[in-house]
Image 1 (cartoon, one colour):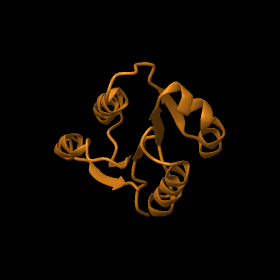
Image 2: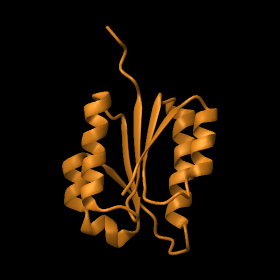
Image 3: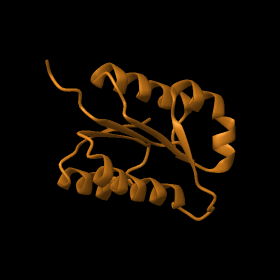
Length: 120
């Protein structure tokens, strides 16, 4: 029997639609069978607006109260590195519709993770 891969799903929820979030969770589940960490990074307004979606998909909202440019992206990147060191996932799925995360992808691969991207 093949061991289950440890999978992290990190979502830039300020940058993708609810439909993309739902499709990303479903696609990741279909491909890997389980998602060990599910987090969506967003501002407070987005967290409230998507509360039912996050609850239904078992996604933990990581609310960013800072209003600075790219502050949500930075929070996701810092958390991703911390999680990779602590959790040692095999796969990291990043959900975003911008290319801001290219340096993060390189760093995660250096740490031995397979990185997949999903976006609009």
